[in-house]
Image 1 (spheres, rainbow over the protein chains, first blue to last red):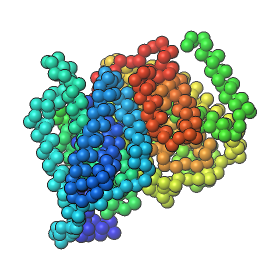
Image 2 (cartoon, helix red, strand yellow):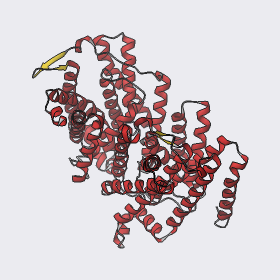
Image 3 (tube, each protein chain N blue to C red):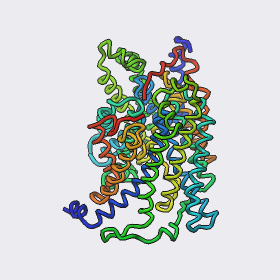
Image 4 (cartoon, chains in turn orange, cyan):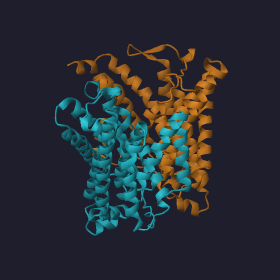
Length: 298
Length: 311
């Protein structure tokens, strides 16, 4: 069986490592979605567009600063901030007036933002592909168990856990995080004790947008930055959030792991339909646990 | 709208639709056919979302499977055409049942997100399975029976099938079954308490919606004599949802109106601009903010159901 031969070849380990760096991106983006979903109860279809804006902004910042490590690091900070600003405008400009509406309406509103933002990106950056080269600092590969692994992928493997710890601290140790968790469970009660829930929602949406932008900026050197990149990502993010458990940050991490690994191993097992494997994993998880692997901690 | 005026209006509309290809040029007849089948698609989605309250976010998949089912039967099976035209919708209904069984245990938003994601899975398979579905190229030059291969012939066929299906769905909505699903939508707990098998009714509604969505897909084959994977992409699912919303989800003919408006706008806009997303997004934003009950909702007597607690 060449399936088995593929699976047990020496390429498997490096494929796993590549899958793990993909997991990092998925986790960063889906933790942002999970945050918004948990507190605001909106599956934000525009999340993929925010990720795309993050990637395009990173390209622009790097172009502006002329490349190099500094330009790259600056882009990793500035691009997510640009996206966070977009998120702020969307939340304060539109959502904040509509929280009383049916969830269906809010979901469709996020879809209309996705449509609008998609075309705005086309207007601002044009329809061509863009690409960012990895700065010299990250070029080359490390040897791990005799296999080459690009330094940039290793960098991502460090960034992922850092973001997870950072989010855990924000959610569990800061007042803002505690209030956000309370608002997720019972927004009315939080409002009744005199806390302005509107700003909690704005904060959550902005933080979620920032994470989407960060994911987009981080993936910029690894892929062609293109207009369609929002569409494929958003479905993956939805599924990750579903199988992880709504609003659960660790669930987003677990879901990303399942998704990233089945994706990279699926390609080994069956190249043509490798993309279907994560989806099959999702169906399997949901047949066993319809509400997701981890409970909603909010 | 007064009840007594409605049948007269419908009769006039039908008469106008019958006369259309006699007075309009060929391209407009083609657009009218697209309007009709898209309206059928939107009406079928509304059965699930507006009448049963299920967040059917992956509806374009049933449209696509209906189209591919018919297209594959016509090109490969050698079966008579009527069998092919039934095979597509039946495949869509079966898929709808399967997806429904996976999703039905979940609450509203979960249900919708999973529907849309499973739909993406089907899309991905169709997109990649070159040897069977033609992959991203789709299938072209599908042979059609002579009677429906001319522009006028196909238009009348589509008009007849659409009218028949819309009539059937209208009967379903007014039947005791229709009342039960509306009861489930308004308050599933109460419906269960009076002895309604909620799950079974929801599944039945999904199967019916999937079937008629599949019929719309089969009709697409008649107009274009081709199919391609993008017709079942998730963005199109949400676009159909917008049609329902724009026309009015809690009226029977709302989706029909909404679909007509969107399709005509799209045809018109594509002549002038490549920024259809910007236009559609802006319309949608305005509708959500100012017209949450849709165009026909303005005239409807019965108000929308109250939102139930959900997550």
